[in-house]
Amino acid sequence: MKCFPCILNHYALENSNQLERPKRLVLEVGCGSGSSCLPILRNCTEDTIILACDCSSKAVDVCKSVIESSTNSKNFGAFVSDPSLESDESDTSFAQDVKTAHMLLLTEETITNDDDIGLADIVLMVFVLSAVPPKRVPRFMKQIYDATKLGGKVCFRDYALYDLPMMRFKETHSIYSTCADFDGETPRLYERGDGTLSRFFSLETVRDLFESAGFIMEELRYATVFNDNRKTGERLKRAFVHAVFRKPED
Image (tube, rainbow, N blue to C red; front, side):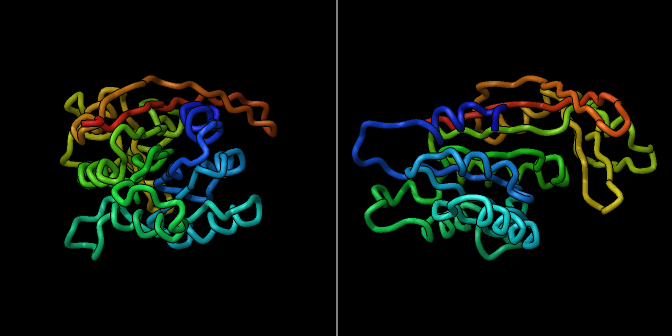
């Protein structure tokens, strides 16, 4: 995760002279195949636990298989959960699901503060919010906030306005939403051929979504990435929103 050095440098790879330290928790929301949490798990120290979740049980199974075949998985757990669900749509909250998964990887010796169980030091949200229906985003963000430790950080990357796929979507794939982006326009929302959603964000909209949930902005910018198509020789310009937000400590 080169784009988020705050994870690898300060949470996963950090060495400490302390003989005893509570295990830190990195939580990936919307894990897919596990490609984002795998490099962290490969490089993290023994005092870091990685949890990954997805609303798709198939994705969770794939993620588990990839991790188990690629690295030591004793500090890794994956589970099915959907932070966008309302309280009357699920028997448990997202924070409860995280706490349950976290407990399975802890021993009595590693539990130093029961209040911190299930609260993430780092939450990783990579290309996940764009797939959440706009009307469900406030609930999604609130549940992410509730599952983040005081002072914890959310590392965010997702599709930006005028990213290449947005320019290639046909108008017939555009979806109208009664919600509004920060600029007053309806969300730039499209439906892929497989029925999943793809939303494209401005910096202002991302900041508004996180700050409305209670987070404090630490970093927010556009990130341009060039992908080379070896087959055609074409160079493709991609545009993403890159951000780090922090949960207040008081």
